[in-house]
Image 1 (cartoon, rainbow, N blue to C red):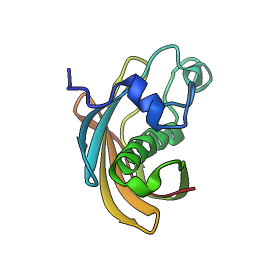
Image 2 (cartoon, one colour):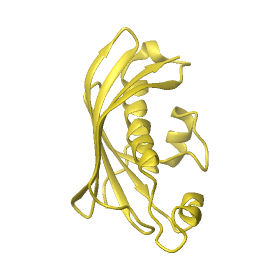
Image 3 (spheres, rainbow, N blue to C red):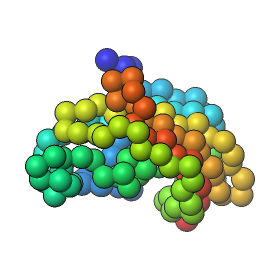
Length: 145
């Protein structure tokens, strides 16, 4: 298993999100201002699996993008002191691609690289892999308010 840099308790202190919308379980790598990696364990008990789709459960793509955004938010909030007391807000999503269905029991490896950070706005490139195979990738643009 991967090393833990920020455990679930630390993540709750960093992010404003709470269950069922907290979509990262731990941070396994962190390089201030540059990159972070995290894990999300896709549990059978996740509420979205019961309705998307009942006979063939798949994690919705928008939640995959959100999990990338949450790892990016941790990267930004822990890298730049001027972000204290602020929360994230999406400005845009580009180059989103979904390559493999994420199903109950999968372990999402979420990798994020910060491309730019200027005047309170950031661009990050993220990727989710499951068992070494690409599942989702996207570039996100966000601000802190």
